[in-house]
Amino acid sequence: MPLGHIMRLDLEKIALEYIVPCLHEVGFCYLDNFLGEVVGDCVLERVKQLHCNGALRDGQLAGPRAGVSKRHLRGDQITWIGGNEEGCEAINYLLSLIDRLVLYCGSRLGKYYVKERSKAMVACYPGNGTGYVRHVDNPNGDGRCITCIYYLNKNWDAKRHGGVLRIFPEGKSFIADVEPIFDRLLFFWSDRRNPHEVQPSYATRYAMTVWYFDAEERAEAKKKFRNLTT
Image (cartoon, rainbow, N blue to C red; front, side):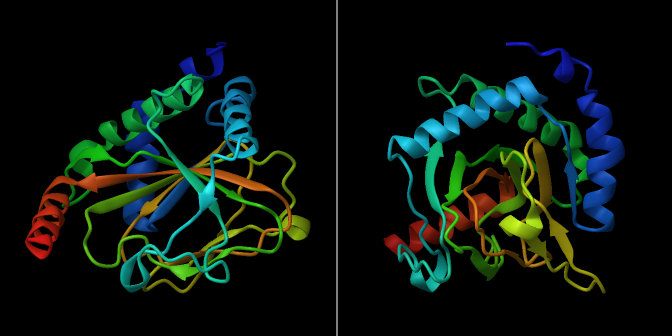
């Protein structure tokens, strides 16, 4: 796998001089041309295979409507990938790079101490005008502190295809529109600071999301869950 582009990236410098300041100042940031064309193509091809093979299922709603699929609220189809599955070497490599970026952020993430993350959620909006209504990833303290999304859409034209991720940063006088273009990597705080929506998509839209957990909040959330179930 040609890695020349990636080997030239100084991940520690990107983390400390760009990601950390942006998260603290505006709550989100993104990197373009992250993997480079060749490696990005490998990830995209695997995601397309998963889609074509029928591995993706309707995304479910969390919270009071947990486990419920309501396509007018959330229209994506998803599957979860650990990265160790057969044929997922490029995805695993992408995840390892994102892990390194978050690791380099280290103690500079304010109150957060990150030790673990979710599996990768591979998502497809099938291009029939579906989106995802305004929501917060972690409104109730489930442990998620950073949302990281990698986009896989070549020749994306937001004017024709829609599919923009619109962020409504809490307490700010602006909104932020992030187009889901190929090889773009987005970071933002997962809590109530960043309500966001996926606007209706009129072309097939692929993305991969991972969530990083704050150790203390995650442990507390698991404890509450155990108490509820017992």
